[in-house]
Image (cartoon, rainbow, N blue to C red; front, side):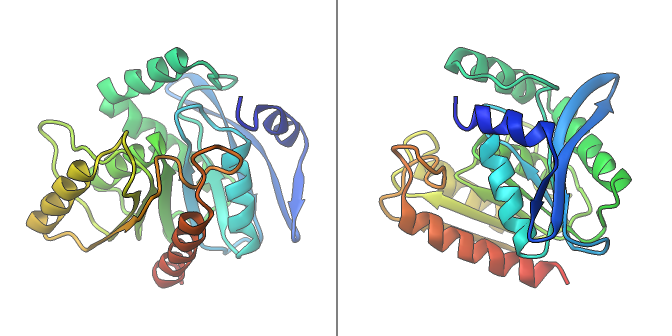
Amino acid sequence: MRYFTSLLLLLTVSTVVFGATGSSVMYQVNGQSYEGYYISPSKQAPFVLLIHDWDGLTGYEIKRANMLAELGYAVFAADLFGAGVRPTEVKDKRQHTGELYKDREKMRALMKGALDAAKEKGANVKNAVAVGYCFGGAAVLELARSGADLKGFATFHGGLQTPEGQNYTRTKSEILIMHGSADSAITIDQFATLAKELEAAGIEHEMITYGGAQHAFTVFDEDRYQAVADKKSWKRFQEFLADKLK
């Protein structure tokens, strides 16, 4: 139940981070309710769309969103599972992610819906980067393949496999991949295969591995957390944002 209790608190009251006010956002996609989190330090702040791990939008993503707000970015932490759906059992996490892996059009629609919700809150979605963690990383690569008009796509220990029948020919912006070399869930072979795909498609990309880092190496308070890889990858992500978002 990673950060679940703190999320309930965060989403029932507004939070203030260095003058930026964050709060829950209820929105609809194809008639279903979703609950995201939006925080912005200013009306014209460059924007980051943040996609959650396989346990849904939890306090971990809220913390990352607040960290980005401290750096001057508006952030919408999207909800791809549905309002109140925050699975804590592995079988439930697999069910919810599995449904979206099988329905890529729905996955894309949910991310577009999140962008629309963010725009309604005042986010500058024309000056935006998408980032995802684990399952969210796979979703961000789906968004990149869809041809979404964003200025960059970044993943932390995200899924890297390209579904059959898909490719990166429609991708419009640079992709940044941050991966743990010791990740047994997403193998280094998958990492290498993606590198070949991006190179063949002529997509600008940077792919970094962190030695000894396992899957979910950025997740605070978990056994697999690796401070060195987290620090280095967060620094590189900040540089990526500064380069892409003016």
